[in-house]
Every structure is written in C-alpha cells, then in structure tokens.
Image (cartoon, rainbow over the protein chains, first blue to last red):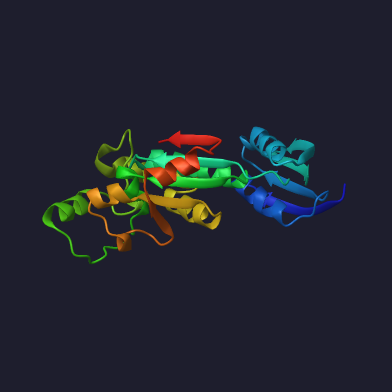
Length: 75
Length: 160
C-alpha cells in the first residue's frame, strides 16, 4: 500500500486522534492514503465513523501489541 | 464534497469543569467532522471564557461581588459532583494527566485553533457584571436571535 503520510497519535486520548487525523487528512490529495497509529481504544469506532462521515474510506485496520493501525484513503 | 458544511451548536450554561470539558470535547470532535461549530456561553458557562488574570475594570459593588464569587477562568472551575471544596478538581486534573487526556484550558485553545466560534451571551455578561476585556480574546458577543440563526440550521444542538 502506498502510504502518503503516517500519523503517530499513540498515547493521545479522545478527541485528539480524530482531531489530528482531520488535520493530517487536510494536507493530502484525494485518493492518497493516511496511516493512523493510536492507542486509544475508542478510536476503533471513532476513526471509521469519522472517515465515513467525512467521505473517506478505511482500507484496512489492524491491532498490534495494543497499537491500533488504520489506513484511510481520502475521498 | 461540495455540499454545505453541517453545523453543531452547543449552549454552555453550566460553569462546572466536567460539564464544560464534555462541551469542548464535543466541539472539537465536531470541528474534526468539518462542522461549523458554535459554543454559546451563558450564565455560569461564561466563566470558562474569563481570563485567569484579574483585569482592572470599573464596577459597582454587586458586580464586584459576583466577580469575586465566580471562578476566574476555565482552570478554576469546580466539579458538578465530588467537588470536595476544591480537592475534586485537583484529583480530576491528575487523572486527566495520567490518561493523557486534555485539560479544559487546552481544549478551549484547540477549539479556537480549529475555528470553533466562541460566543458570549451579552445579556448574561451584563447581568454578571463582566466586562469584555475580562474575557479571552476572540470571543463574539451576541443574543438569542444569533444563537437561533445558527441552531435552526444546526444538525447537532446541545444544551450543557
């Protein structure tokens, strides 16, 4: 996967992962992929909900050692 | 995405640290959702907008009393439950730090950064004897009509 930008939001609590993701996404072009790394368990629901409402697509999500990783394609 | 932006409006009536925190977390989340966000502060909620430093202004006796009795700024506000004469807020700030959450003053800063419109209700500003120079920069002053104009187009309207 071609990742245009990696956002390290580890250790941050609600609402920061979504706030940072929005800021990072604003700098990308449509079709580019943002990788988000977070340790906020609420992000499992938060980021997909935010992506859907904002017109982006979650391509993949995985959990590794307590770190949630999302790959979100800008709409 | 060419459709007009959605709107979120929040009335912050409460002057409690925890309730204001909830209001500002929702506001920041809504801004990340690319909503136009307005927080309309009235009554005790106005204290969230006060500068922490005392500002020398001319006031009558009653207004001075109000100014003394109310918390000067977001960081000095009490909790709606378990305030324990001021120990509660200290404890909650400790757990906020421990969990890497954002304390209220930083949530307000971030809301401003994200373009959240902060409005002070002019009528209650006058009632409580607050002067514009006692409030943080970037606050707009308005009344019920301005709020309703925003809220009638609002997709999310909350009273906290």
